[in-house]
Image 1 (tube, rainbow, N blue to C red):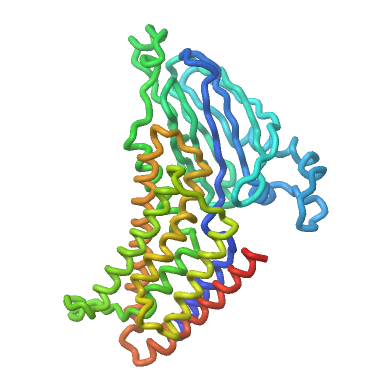
Image 2: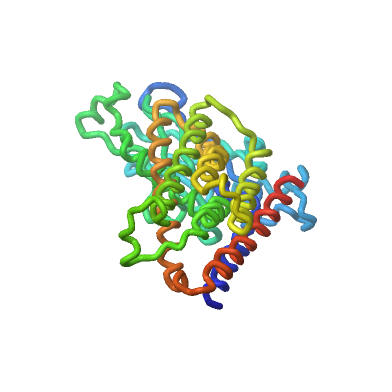
Length: 387
């Protein structure tokens, strides 16, 4: 019992980031100057100042506030860092980059420094993007790559941990290289399948690092006494497994609706109210585990609050500015990834809970005690996000 409670407390207290839906992300936009196959590439890379502060002392006086003077002073060092950890790789003679400062931009999780560069790459040559920024500092960091290359939309993700650079295009055949006057003959493009797979991984990663979403899932499943074995074969309406299926399905429907609406621009929601509302959803669900209200069934809570969580998920896809031609495939892959992550998290809890689910004190200690901890954590998140 003590071990389980210790693990539960650690999972809750270590999940303290207030804006948990937005992890460490950087954004790269790659575009050709014109439709010619040998046209120069224009690149813009945006990296969060809060992430760069892990590598460089941007906050020179350590007062917790970044001033314009501090950013200006640190910019040369930032550009040198980008120069060392990024680049375009080709089989032919390379196309070196020289980054220059291109301004600051505001995103949902704070200010980003934007750098720009131009490269002239060999016609028809294979092209890959090398990115190792934050490899040693943050295993969860991701780079979102968008733009247009050789007349085709480009959409991909990369991790600094991956062994190989991100393939942007493959080399053309010898015949096509010899007849490279046509942009369509110049390269073999990343396909739809690559986009779906990239965003499936991104969705799963986003779910599993979204501590507030994980906390909400835990609040939903805590009161369900999910036992493996003989009792798992029950099929009545009162079976906890049937309740789990209804609840998870309702939550999936809820967040899928708003994720789609927000991604396609049919509905908008500001993080200013979405993030506190997500924290409130955890607190309400946890408190209802302690003080149940019969009319507020878990699946109803999951559906209603799922609509709010969907707006939280949509933030990453919206900020990635995916090309319209690949956006539906990115959305499909991302949503599948979220569901895969959700199933992984629920399965992990079911297996872990088997250690104590048959104990007489399970309801009092795990359900009520765990729900109280979740409510306190959610209250803290709500306070930080509002004030």
